[in-house]
Image 1 (spheres, rainbow, N blue to C red):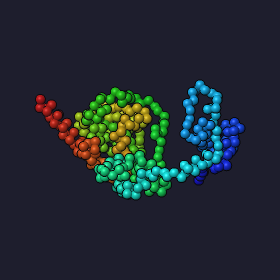
Image 2 (cartoon, rainbow, N blue to C red; image 1 turned 135 degrees about the vertical axis):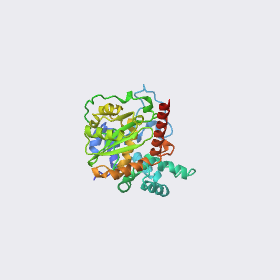
Image 3 (cartoon, helix red, strand yellow; image 1 turned 180 degrees about the vertical axis):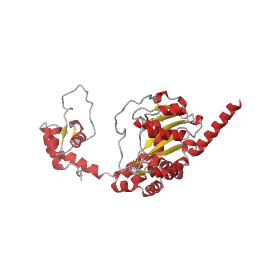
Image 4 (cartoon, rainbow, N blue to C red; image 1 turned 45 degrees about the vertical axis):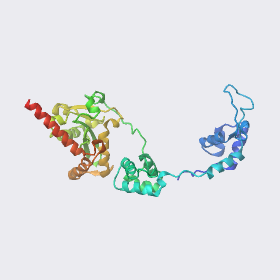
Length: 358
């Protein structure tokens, strides 16, 4: 177990007063008390007494150029510091927002249904528009769950990623190698970057125990396609892409954006075989492929990390993909990705028919 935190005692404050009078620096006081340097430094800073402020009612102006004089003296006295600490401990503290049982009951119920944090926060505003107590932001819910071990063990699995503890931002750093024919994402057409154009995809992989998944997401409609691959080699990845994109019309597969993994080193086969443009996101910038990362996160709800994936699980994977493609999304005006993708295909078919008739 870790060290148990305790407040400074009156004896420790007396040691601080004596050592400050002797001219001892903070590091020396820290070694004597066995305390953290920030604890001692904070104590000295907030409980220093100025001769000009004996009644805490008046402090004269002191120019910066004034280095000596009666107003530059400062003293630390253990007795007043101990009394001030007692008053601080006696002051009532503000309760945590989720300590309200009525609010936490609603949040816990919706998390148990598989809701994400943002819909939980927004739904409270819809159901309780005039009740300020029924308000909570997603970050507050996440911190509340991870602050207590029992809540973390029971509720962390309900969070979108289901991690047992919060992870730092930025991820790990891996070695890089030059991908032949790599085109940076900065050269991608504007209609692909702002999602105004249809048929621009994002590619990624989901690693499992045994086999892996290859996923493709269309940027505008958020339509998801996924397939099981035996490994994560470049040949297997591009083979899965060719199998997914070949049934689609040429107008529905214009470009695809990859990450910088070794699994996409043979991306030129997409250019040669299907005429698709291939681009690569900047290193450590998964936000540039946010749609694919979001869909992979939904797959992880059903297949967490270290889950066993086998080639015979195609039917189970199809059910997971159907659930993702048939869930309404606010960004699509509460249409499902499957509906939006079907509408785009019909519009593309009409455009090609008009061009052919002319």
